[in-house]
Length: 159
Image 1 (cartoon, one colour):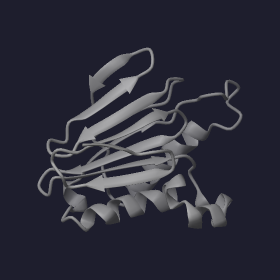
Image 2: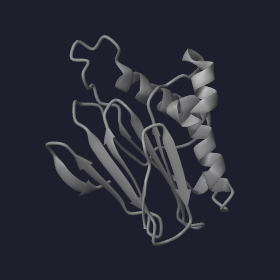
Image 3: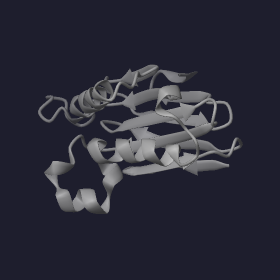
């Protein structure tokens, strides 16, 4: 079953037939994690790097921010037997969309914060496709961990 992860949303599944997918990652970041032993996958679509910008919004929508959404993503997979040490982690997005002058650099800041968080927590990123000016769609098959990436102007490929 296809499970759509919206903007500022997160989903986790341990059903082999499920496919987690998120569309239109621009400056947002999609974080895909998969434990090949527990066969658990998770997908987070966050918009902003730091929840301290708006504490009330972070309380209501924790998946909107990297610093609140990423820990919740990992913790949710642990409930299904996943282990951090086995995680295959992929990161996509972080484009410079509608910010041609690079004033806000939200995509770059979103990418920097996920790298920093993973570095501090000893998590290696297996693959990533970030930056540029294209929108991306990413999906993961829960049973196999097969991750497909579609990039505007570049086509579709396995990540």
